[in-house]
Amino acid sequence: MKGFLQTFVLLALTSSFVSAFDPSPLQDICVAIDEPKNAVFVNGKFCKDPNLAKAEDFFFSVKTPGNTTNPLGSNVTAVTVDQIRGLNTLGIAAARLDFAPHGEVPPHTHPRATEILVVLEGTLFVGFVTSDPNHTLISKVLNPGDVFVFPIGLIHFQVNIGKTNAVAFSGLSSQNPGVITIASAVFGSNPPINPDFLAKAFQLDVKVVKDLEEKFKMDN
Image 1: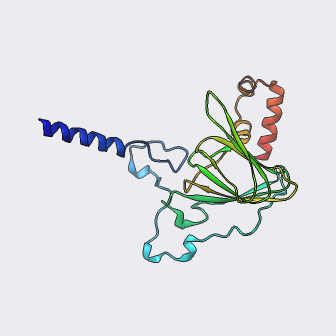
Image 2: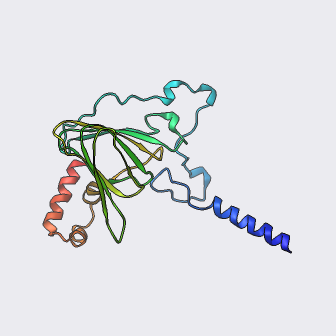
Image 3: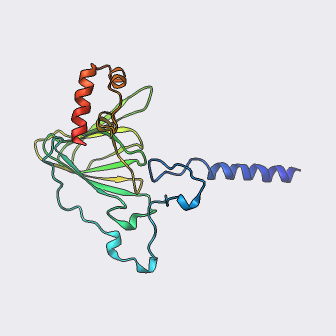
């Protein structure tokens, strides 16, 4: 009996370690389906025969600056599995961030990735906000060579507070990190969210909400 209990405890502990958390999803939704013939492949991408792999499968260039002539004054060049096919199943991605003077990447989240950012040129003000109930803003001014981390799922932003262009690179802990830009998602959803709901949620006049929905509908 003693040996049985020891074995049981060992198995229970092992099971707890193995199942400590759910695996990271690679898509926003995955509706269960009973009939396999109508199912879709969900593990990112199908795989090439390893014997046919070549250097181009693991290469992508981000040396060209992104176009920042837009209302936000910024450009994000993504480097995900869609750009580098060899990233499939490796759980990482990257991005180049270009900023015009006073340009910004507005508040957003990555639902499937933590982000680590390295500033190469310019001066950025960056930060993230913790979840309910505290909503603590954790922020810092970054200069070339500085590194900052944005935890998975938390709302964060980057703003160029300098008078010159700024460049940064990000690493992300998913081959498909996803991005939810808060204002665009809320005010630019399709179909639109009832403006009365949003007016109450944001404590705004309904007319203001309708104007925002019209603007972000056109932007999207």
